Length: 321
Ligand SMILES: [Zn+2]
Image (cartoon, rainbow, N blue to C red; front, side, top):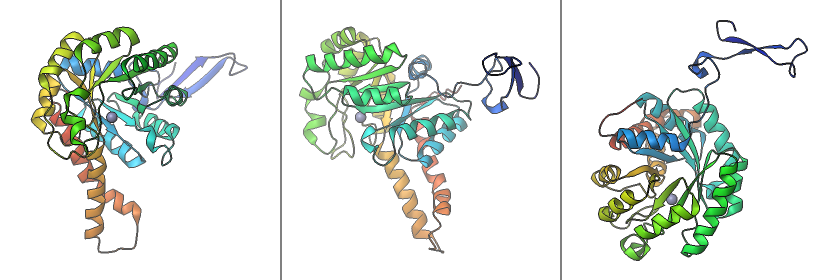
């Protein structure tokens, strides 16, 4: 083993002399001198968050800028985050590409970054996440009846665990913020008794719950059911996840964190922050020559400010690694 990042390893398979020299740049070196693993397990990040009383921001991304900016802010703040991809956007950016870009950028920072495939609603889609290298995937059978959801989740968990991939499941249905009934009617909320049996039956690693949250833009301010959250958290050992984390008032987000939500999915608000920032830059532009590179560069600060705000808001104790 030599200095300056060069390592000699013994490998008869790779070299006739049995020695191969590998250069490992300082910024991707781990404490043992080997290559830093690009990604941290989502379960490890959520456990750290639970111990240190912060909520993990899970940002939904669909292009290079969103991935890069989120990872840079996490590194600046020294607070772990999860980068996640919604497979419904795969016609815009392939599932595989989102994983590759995230892994490459995560390998260049020291802060733990998780990677997760959001909302897979079939066994095949969930397995595509496994195939393309997501260490964490979601199986969403929440539109099915309890038995069918449990069966689908159990099958995905069995296959994913066989190759070391973690699984988030959903019980109770998180609907749309555009439909008042979806997030106001407690018939859609997660039943605590069912949550206990669901985790026992499926072996899922984390659970997305419905407690008055909804996806997309809300038509009215949500009022999370904290009593229900508290009961579920006390009875279910796995980390809990809140979908539809955009536009929920800060106090409710923080209280949800204190009562046991470990991961907060933020998609709509991130998307909007990016859109608004680009729009402002375009409005202000004195040279509408269409230089997109400059537009994105000028948009960066406002989007990063938004991401920083969310990370800090979910981390009132100011923890960092
Ligand atoms: Zn969701």
